[in-house]
Length: 137
Image (tube, rainbow, N blue to C red; front, top):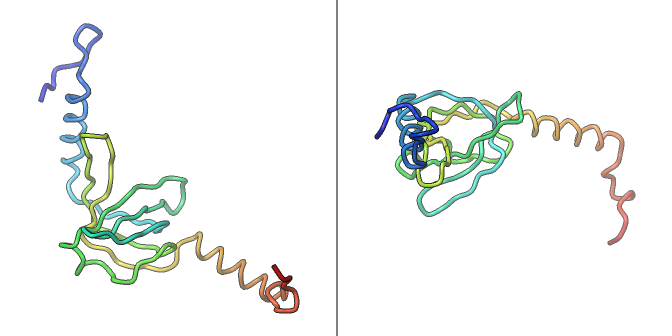
């Protein structure tokens, strides 16, 4: 890995840049992160999804490998608010950054799901879901 400064005359290769980024990101080690699951699916090797920031329009993909399954709640769904211990992983081949979850704790409903539930309750109280209001398809 070449840590020499990049210049117009001696630019870094893409491979060198991604190697530098991976080394930097690997130094972060494990981090605790809080967010809301916006998408989750099961695969052969584990579970995969997206974790959204609670305050900003920022999200990251995550992986939960089968080896960490006993450290993660079995019942996870979109809208769950969680705190996770994760390693930030940078895939040099395509420049993708993901969280590799080691542990996860469910801490409640995420803001989006909570807002949806409040709206659903309000509309139900107004009678908008009453059977007599439904129109045939």
